[in-house]
Image (cartoon, one colour):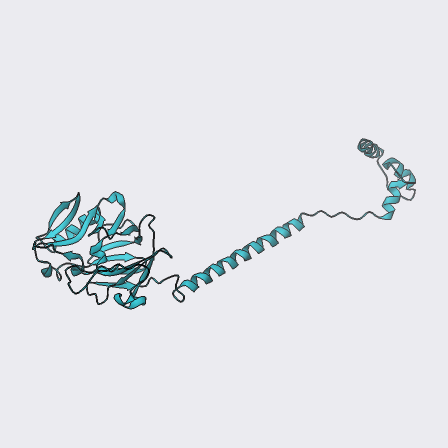
Length: 297
């Protein structure tokens, strides 16, 4: 999607399918930043914060979903941040009025847009290690047959916990929607002067742009898991060996003492046949052993 400023008659907006026209992007293919799509039923990026004139708009509440909304003309932001923006802009322009359109607030200046380009501050959008900056000329607009200048920001209820980036935002950029990789590509329109981009967000699926790094990471992770599994196996094997009980082998002499003519000899009788055994034996103990042997049989 290549939206342009409708007031600029030299430029023409265009939508293409199946390919990217890199000639319309500042820096060509390398001019794109790539963001994962976090939307389920729509295209959206994770917006960490929004600032005005390099200052936060109230306390940041963490990252929010920012929907790429070509069906909406304005940049919609949470009501609490819109209120902060109004306070800051009124401090620069006392002619600003707040109006309500379809239940949502907008800001309108009684001055000509051209007189506000150097008066207002920039809008900054912080997205995943990158910063997108839109200058006043990039977010101000006027309607036909009206002298008022409209600020292209509109409020949205805090309960939605999201931003919506409409055509006021998109007209500064070439935006690509990659269905195959489920990612969003944003680059500056060719020869644009109303916006800038800084920071890197490379294509993770492009060789040399971080894709191989991801593969190496996965390989190293799998090797680490294999090493941990091997150590656990060897340790379990060692513990199993430690639990084994070994018995001394029975000698031929022991067998001769226990059996006579193929018949098992009772302990009390072993004493009689072991004539060379000088060890004193407790008769009561022999009787107990004999009783136990009878029970076994």
